[in-house]
Length: 99
Image 1: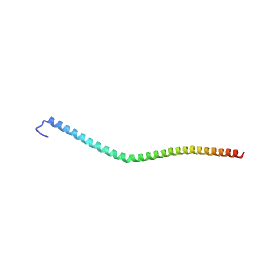
Image 2: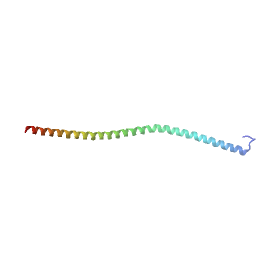
Image 3: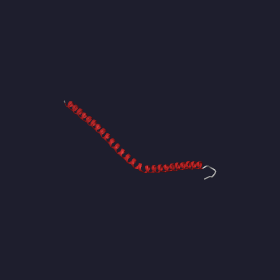
Image 4: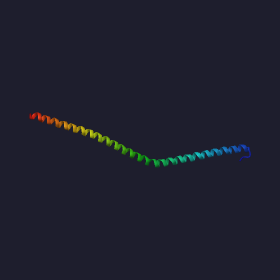
């Protein structure tokens, strides 16, 4: 403390510098906590993200398999209908040629 400055000025200076010091300390603590939280989030999130990706891949695979089955069934139905129609046409031709 300076004897030249009045006590009131000295106390106000001390209080303002204490406030600034506290503000800086709080800011550094907040930065450290945020950094630590990010590290934890990085460690935890990839596991959940991987599980979510696997689940989405499985559901997508199931959906595409269902679509493929439906398409194949339609194609098979069309093919069998065409085969049956061809056989019927051959039988008609065979009957006409025998007459």
